[in-house]
Length: 370
Image: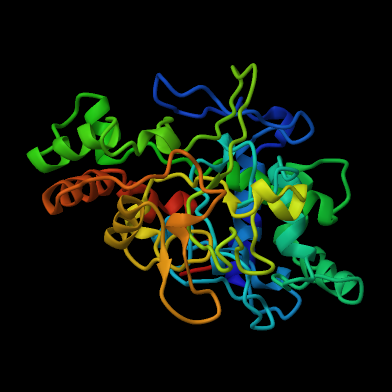
């Protein structure tokens, strides 16, 4: 009872959305604010409501899974697994991606160019059947919604965040999207270096030069302020949506990827799109392993070895093949002559992208944990 009263008091202390001050992004000078849908403007009330829903297991079909189960704060909102696990134990097809700075991403999965808003993307883990993730379906939807609407803290929260709108999966999704948009990460050691607050050590500086130089060529796919190559913000006039085949598989010698995990090809049907995936952000990459769309590369060292070789070689098993020879591989992926010392320097630089504040900030933490 004391906990319920506290929740109600906290919600009551938050002003109605219409009366709230404008949302402040608190961004570096060179980072424009992200685009936000006009029907789901940012507010602190919506952010906090979404945070609570993000961590609430009652939102899953089995009552045993939350969004946070696959997006854990201490891992930069990934989960450390090769593949995610749904409410029934079914594995997801791909490695869960981090959510830091997701507000600036114009597409929101590894390879689906049609999912361009967080609101639309949230429908996939909530309602998807292949695989089942959160496990919301027509049979259990009323019961799940009843769990939320019966909670007095949510009754107060939705009334404050979305006045005049009924509590529904539409407003639930809007609130979670607001929380996700508010997960920002711009306080890594590299960010502090850019602000003139510290100097990189010798290895990190050598790694930085390699990363942004033509020898290692990392910057071609990871050169934006978000360390990826798909970025959208309020000043964007045109938005590029590149997807890349990085030579991870070549099962039949003709470019085949594992069935059901063929990247952009699954949406376009173009053979040249087989194996093409979005380049993920490298922010916080030190803590987001295992890596690649299938979670098949366990360490940063092996990722770098993979790219230096010009692709991944799978020596045996049903997915065996030499990805280096994939005919659809991007022209950006070629063998790179890096010494062991140079590889270590690049790894040192990548670790400067870890935002320790993000990993522990109470603002993004589980509100149910006491």
